[in-house]
Length: 348
Image 1 (cartoon, rainbow, N blue to C red):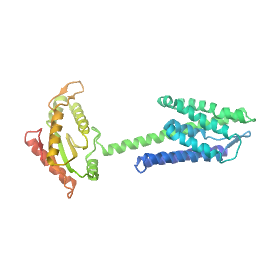
Image 2: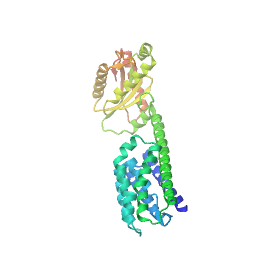
Image 3: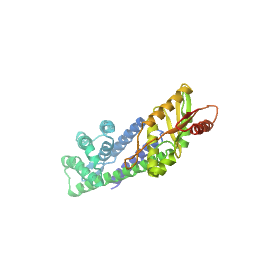
Image 4: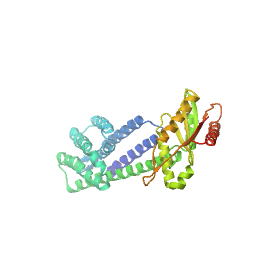
């Protein structure tokens, strides 16, 4: 029982280490390549530790090395699975024992190959029941056959204990992996909505300003304030839900432009940072944007076209010696002038 609990502990400790690695990746502190290497090393070390703590039942020694191997291949495929398979197999020869080749064949090689063959189909319908049935199959082609071949003292009791420990470990590992994955996904969503506008998916003003300050360029940096013309009329005529559709579609339209940093300033106002060799070039790009917008179709939820959607734009060059908001305020004043001039204008 102590050896069995030790196997459980190794599996859980492996999971905690792997979870920590992916948390570092979530924080952008480790690259994907470093994460992959760390993941491989953790699983290899865990499998080697399992070699050292076998469970002995009726003179038959076994461990739970198959479970982390199969789960790794199930979630990450051959890119991580094959390196672990090779390193763990070579490491097994460093420890004395009989039937080494048989062990590796039935506890690592065959389960890995089977998992690689069916992982895509299994992943499409992954659930506790399907995973249990899958691990029943893995146990039958690995530990069950190996125990029958190399052990003379096989009993129903020993088979039952090995089967139960195998399935319980697999389901517990799956539970912890699912929980960790959901927590990371939730954290990712919270971080996204902390930095982005929930309606349009664009950067909010705080994140826009931070990224604009961090952006380095050898060209002139311009900031543009954009305001959808007569937006209140769109809301009054087509309803606020369709007004939101216009905002979301316009945000998608702005995101299609290359080399621009785009954010939502608030309401129907948007903010853009772009690079240009001259002020004239920036002005031309904004005029081109307006022309492209005039050809863009905006459709209500009922399929009715919203016509004459246009935008007024104020431009200002970013002064690197001044706070960024000072340039934004100058662009906002230019925007006010564009609206005063009759809207659908670009003003510097």
